[in-house]
Image (cartoon, rainbow, N blue to C red; front, side, top):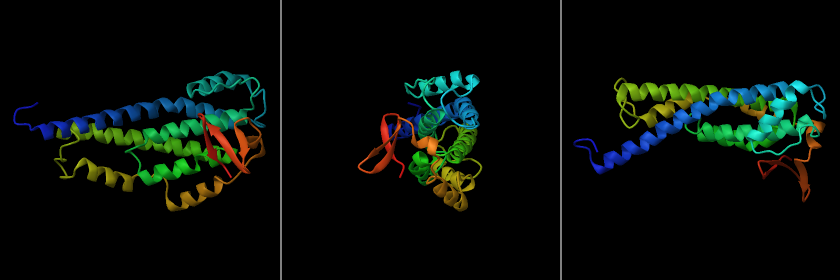
Length: 224
């Protein structure tokens, strides 16, 4: 404990120290996800998304599925199933990384439409665009945190330039760096209801009590 520091101040410092570490870890994960996004973008370009998609993507697709704990026989599973399952898992992971850098409301909206977006090529492309933008915002937020700590000595300290707390800065950051605007929200909501036939035929999709569901990382999500 620093000289003159109370136990309460120490705990506050520890809490903000953990928050700072989490922000840096999220940025590292966002950077690492770029290769997964590139793989998904390559798979989206496949003309029919049937079994036997181009060999150059088979290895990367298998690696992608394995990274998310998915035991898929890439040789015999349609690319549509690989795409919908891995994209869903990637976005859910990304939402965890985005905590802090984007608002809770935006995170919940993307989580709610994630499964539906992954049922069409156009929807998956939109989902990946969201992931890219979220990664960019997360990396920018991390840079702001690094600058804040260097300038002020920690996230628990008010900014020397503006007098803001880190919480106040974060609220302003969300307003100035939205993940989606109102018009994009309408477009994404409509896209989340679009269904390409090849995405409805995989083993990851099933109908339970008349409701169509998709399985992502062992959990079922409603897509109707």
